[in-house]
Image (cartoon, rainbow, N blue to C red; front, side, top):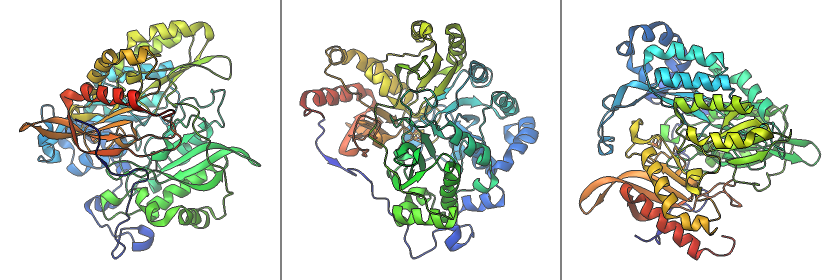
Length: 559
Ligand code: SF4
């Protein structure tokens, strides 16, 4: 197999708005008459209402007492999805109904919103994993923690424990403001432009769980950073605030809107405005209400903010934001400078207060309850304070005293965490995949973990002699939905069933050459599909090795 034939978007993908000759289901244009089944039940009763029923009825009476509309719809507003029944192969995913694919257990998503986790919080999270989730816990690429094997009877106790340490599952899924991405080094990095913590906390305080924002056309993703490594993948969120310094007004934020991946990827665009810290929550509220009021609701696959931006363009979006939602113009502002680093914060770094932060990599985000609990013990033993999750399925330990750094780094591998990982362990991400996801076609986590181990051996020569001196992002997805960001990786893999010599098997379609501003390139760009190339899952290490060796041998200076 050779990598020669390419197709697909070179940069900003075409995201055509729906046809203009009929209603798109925009509340402010077309009225609120529901145009599809999801819109009907969301208007009948919002998802937030289901929590009380879970606590008072379903947890007492069990799984069979849950009506379908709550089970497959409203539960998402509290971070709950039914997980895939074990043993159903990927070739049958498209043939079976949701009911046939669904197990009686749940995936549960806990949002962290860039919040730092204390040892106490880590113990609570680890305890939930051990007591209710068969030891599972995965860091997602949105700084959430995701459990599996949750039964409905456990939910009241899980919520009670989470709330003791300030954590929640409120609108962790559903047509809502999902978990926020916040800079993992907020408030501590010596080179930070502005600490986003006050803005994140203010948006959460005012709007998280707000019924007025609980029926959006679809999901709404937020990212906020003030770190110059641009560490929250701001180009692929619905709204992003990125730290900049205005020549007269000082530190504040540059506003980006309309980014998202999935099967129709589109990078966010700048509106060209400068947002002060004081006004950031109002501006966020304006953007999300534009989405609520003008977003397309007729077709679910056209309901993200990116489609509205494609129709309006940044100038009209800015005008509507300023005139209809804020009531005054915003000042023009500068763009962020190019990223100063990879933004994953792996390794040992100095804080501005003389202590250190240490970024560590698990394998494809897998941590588990024992790791979380063990990490709490390790933190306390070296005098470290807190942990944040990253947008790259990694974690960062904060506030490590200088005398504790070596002991911390030495203690991490016993927990499955590495502060000096190989290039492949550092950069590989994988979505949930066929183990638990009902939409999955192929396995991802185990396949990616095996590939990492294999590549560490096979490509050790390139690492040792220094010729592989740039990170290679390898993102493994179990279906076309791009939860692990296929199009923004150097090598993006999209799971599908392929036929080799007449035999159907798990494999991947390949995207090459994607990347975000934070991934060591000047400008974000979407990867290109390598048309006709399908890689069997069993041959993944062979393929990656070939691509990496070809890249190292043939790249131009500075490439
Ligand atoms: Fe599931 Fe597909 Fe998302 Fe992976 S990319 S988690 S398989 S929906």
